[in-house]
Length: 307
Ligand SMILES: NC(=O)c1ccc[n+]([C@@H]2O[C@H](COP(=O)([O-])OP(=O)(O)OC[C@H]3O[C@@H](n4cnc5c(N)ncnc54)[C@H](OP(=O)(O)O)[C@@H]3O)[C@@H](O)[C@H]2O)c1
Image 1 (spheres, rainbow, N blue to C red):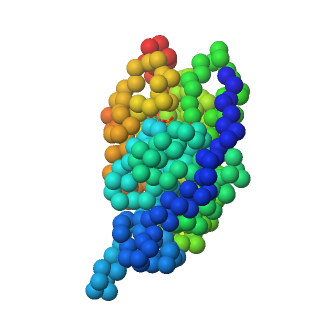
Image 2 (cartoon, rainbow, N blue to C red):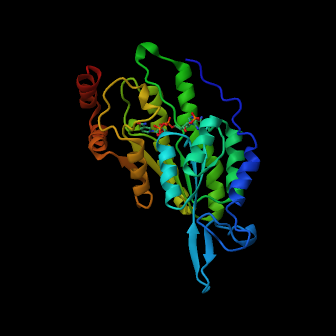
Image 3 (cartoon, helix red, strand yellow):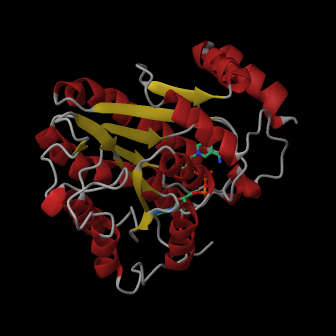
């Protein structure tokens, strides 16, 4: 199948809008008015956390910024909605400009059109986001999927899914980690998948880059922690979205995107490295991961392939 091209991954006046959306939250009078209010005079505190004077000289934390990449639909959009409701300033990115802009308007976020597989665009966007308001949270959520039985082996599909599901995360990390290091804090969430725990039939083009993303986070986490950055993975089971609409089989433990977003939100302040759900699917999959190959392939042949 031909890869759809997103030549015009910009929203008309995107740069101006991007600036406006942030400056609109700047209080002209110098009195902060909401979670996204910028310091009087438009000056941003170096570490990006926003504080306001409450009159008695006490400085109160008043807002945080999240950049969600791949958030014009599904889990990312619902997670953005929850963050906005909780008082965060949210920037969302994706490729398709109209859907992105509509999604941003719907939840009260700022759109920034970007293709995560375009390395230069990722770097330019990261600079733009960090120069406006340093994000405490960056989520790499862009993803693509298509099932592939062996008889339909498609090298193009492998390349495409590797670019979005793995290299996209590498490009984002390569840009944001050094910028976050300067500020000495922040959290980066990579949305991988429970499909990355072990190879599963019909899923190789998707699960291999997802496994690589989990390894990527595991490998970088200890050093990132020394820079003050929490690098973590999200491993969801099945979630109802545009991606899983391509599945014709029964998906055990299928969650709505809203429920999945709520689980991510609940896990935001956890100390753990991984946010995974739902438990009823995750634990059996984790058990499968521990099985010796002989038993694993027996199980897959009997219970997965023959159904
Ligand atoms: N649904 C599941 O069962 C499930 C399970 C485990 C993990 N996940 C992972 O969760 C993440 C979110 O998936 P979802 O199920 O919520 O699907 P979704 O609704 O299709 O969301 C995917 C988002 O990523 C964007 N995107 C796709 N390719 C992109 C690219 N090259 N550059 C920038 N943005 C891009 C899409 O917008 P555009 O197409 O306009 O760019 C969309 O906003 C994915 O990483 C997926 O692999 C999903």
